[in-house]
Image 1 (cartoon, rainbow, N blue to C red):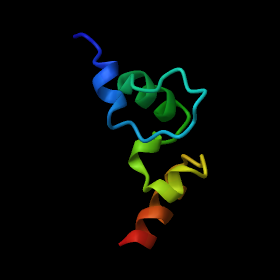
Image 2 (image 1 turned 180 degrees about the vertical axis):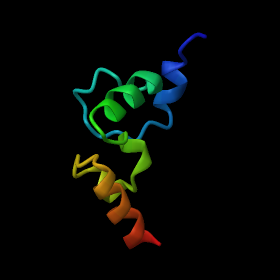
Image 3 (image 1 turned 90 degrees about the vertical axis):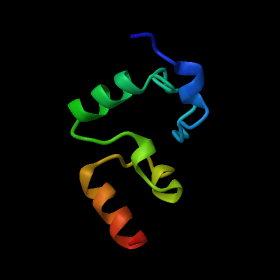
Image 4 (image 1 turned 30 degrees about the vertical axis):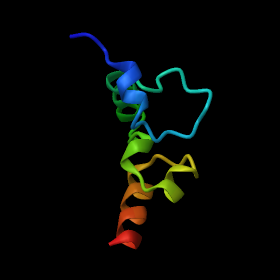
Length: 66
């Protein structure tokens, strides 16, 4: 399967400019799951900008939004 990095960048919400995985969703997901984290696209914008990608931060962010 061919990566659609350019298309993915249209909806990638990661605000970390130095990320080499930006737009390469399969690599991003593997990287974060290996670290027991979720990618930035799983978080609401205000929580994403904290760069805390932990499962706990995910639960807190969505509990507050709900």
